[in-house]
Length: 599
Image (cartoon, rainbow, N blue to C red; front, top):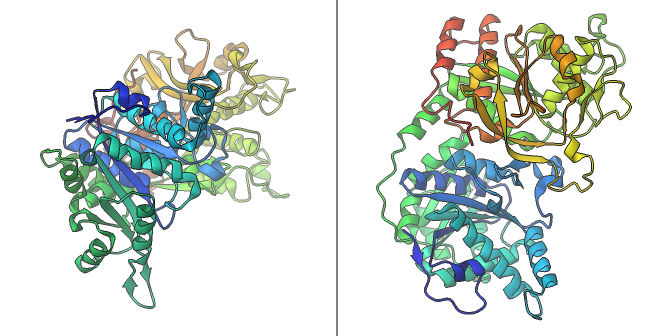
């Protein structure tokens, strides 16, 4: 059900003039404080609407001036999420994909920098015919054009757009002005504003306070936006009496006020919002009639999450471990692997860049870059994972962790840089290539087993210039990789500049490492594995970006299954009596778990 345009006056956004009809739009804004969960609220609402049979797509409007987050530090922005078409985007797009189970595009992430870059380019070409280029209408028209185009490209019935930042921030004003204008242009019944705000509990008085919500709504109304629905974040239920008070003072129908209490896991949020009737209210507001959602699949997922059969400990070795959001998709993919085999996963964060002590146990002298107690920590794990990253800091600690996992038979999974660390470690300690390294870390290494991709040699700009997006990988028959995927050719998302040096392919394989996945022409190594190990696999791509909570990526599913087997052997997995039980779990995953990794 699409909304028809009322008129097409001069000066309106190009996409609005070009289309005969556009999708319905839901705009999610936030107030009072950051990190209230706008993205999760938007994604959860999207999940509910998909269960009601609607075609849904999502978009994030980010107020920072960077063109994209690709060159931003993970300490400032968290992970960079990569889409199929190679866009480096905000981590919220990962939440969107995991919840609505749709592969989003470059157009789903819009930044202030990208908007201004486009407008300035048009001005230089003379597209504005001598106009004085201003925030209104030129910047706001560009924003509206991006909003409308994302729905057109996805052929969506509903577009859910999250406006980044907090209402009142100067950076967000052009985006808020644009969504205000859009309601007038496409019709009031075709736009719904959902505002996420905070209802804090004041301990000494024993009360939930509504004043922050009132002030936030007043701030939103001051720029011309009257919210249609409110999502109240709190650590306890919002009573009917408080909802009535907020309804009166904020001029929002009581049916549009949803209480969103802190949940034990994020995948409960769609069920919480459904219980509050938010999806019903939004659809009624948009004049869309749909049958109630069948949430049996999602409820089964939440039940598996809440009632695992046991727990495994997975160590993640990285240099951004003080900010877990830097590895958000990795975390969710590991957990999804656990959901698929009925196991809870305790993630043990281990900083690979901390300096080792001056004195070490003689038995550990071969591992000089592990921190004090690092060896014992690894031996107490059920799996070791080395995620992606850039730069030399922490590299040797990761390589030492790979060595312990390889020598002690601990399940290992390497991602992107993790594959490169695994190859370096194998080259040094098995293939006898002393001093082997990557030219990223040591340009003078005698054995550059990892080297710059040939097509990257003349690339000097950093932004959007890596090998990005979906690329094919051919799996070799009889390998563990082919068994895990069950396909001959797969497509996975990449983000890297360096690759296994083809000059060392033969030497490394002669010493026992298997290149079980390569580019179709055999030039680039995509997956390595060891056949004489319980589970030792590493991928040059980022499988975490294609994992879903109810359809775990096969690499993560089998990695966690191997970790469960080790936990059973150690007597540390309480829910399964023997290895055969977990083999059954891994062999018969939940519906849709394996999925298809074709293009």
